[in-house]
Image (cartoon, rainbow, N blue to C red; front, top):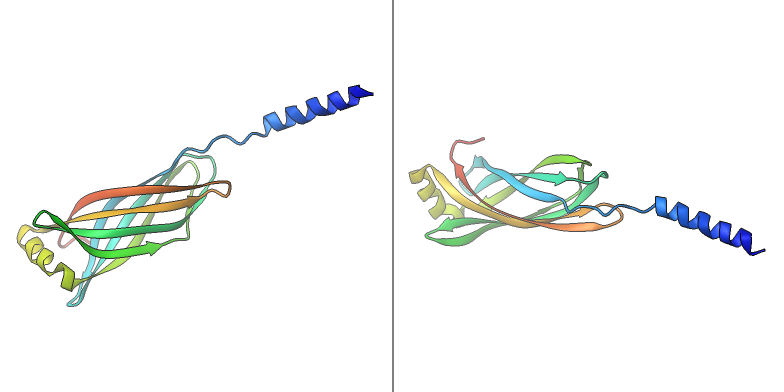
Length: 154
């Protein structure tokens, strides 16, 4: 009478051993570049280009990416803008490129623009993080990059 119980227990153990979900690797988010899209009297439109590298065999959703954009002014970082977006599909086993627009108030950027016009470029720092949802787990992935943005890029 105990044999069917042992056989059932062994069957359950074998099935569950084959159904173990492998551990997911942490994805990365990289700021590839920042482009100036438009300079108007009151604001400057930037485009932040991010690359999400997902080494996992399942796709994810970038539910939120939050970032701050700073300008280098005399050795000090000055906050220019904050942005948040979400709802991007991220492919499995590969890279997904996304672009996020952000508008900067020129009142904060006047010194940087004048210096950038003289130098031909402005130094920006973008720091932030993205939340990737895999359905079974989520990862919050930080990123931080300093870039020089030349005028006339589009």
